[in-house]
Each structure stands twice: as structure tokens, then as C-alpha cells.
Image (cartoon, protein in one colour):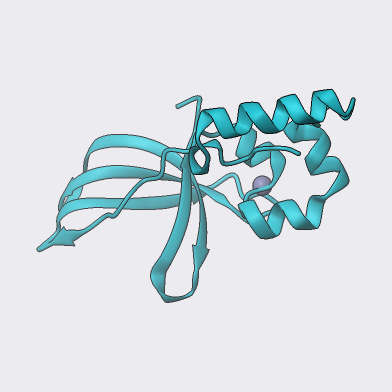
Length: 123
Ligand SMILES: [Zn+2]
């Protein structure tokens, strides 16, 4: 058992599962061990590869919106990952130009201008 999205479970549920594994003498694998053993399953579930996942937090860039060139947007596209195809983008508050940087995120784009993002731990 490995918990990659702990917010989906109550802490006591995770505790019970870990206690049960320990009772059966089956230690829970680390996230990195799980990635090495079940790479395809990880990518299907998480989207981001282990390296990109571990360099980021669960914090998403949220919705971005500009009206008449005023608002928030994520732009740029640097440091592409060859495994999960995410890139690093910067979220900023815009008035015609990006004025206030609000953080850098690893982002995977989907069809229809949708995306999934995770905030970089090191800005
Ligand atoms: Zn990646």
C-alpha cells in the first residue's frame, strides 16, 4: 500500500491500513519504490512522473482568467519532462503584461485548454 493522495483519506484510515500491513509484516513501500515497480499505474493515476511529483506540492494553480487583459494567467513553457511531458509555467497577475509573479508550477496540458498543475517546492 502506498498513499500518493493523502487528502483523499482520513488520517486514521491511513493509520489503520499501515498498522494492518505492519501486523502482516508487509511494510508499505515508499512512493519512490512504488514508482519504480508500478510506473504505468503511477502515470495513469498521478499524471506526473515521480521526479516531477516529488519536486512539487499538491497545490494547483487553480483557475486562471483574464478579462480585457487583466487577471491571472499561466504562461511560459520551460524544462519539459521527457517522461510525463509536463513543463514549468509561471502564474502571474496581468494587466496587459505580467506584473506580479504568483508562483511556478509543473503543468500537464489536456485537450480543450484544460491543465493539471503542481506548485514547485523551490520557486
Ligand atoms: Zn515528469
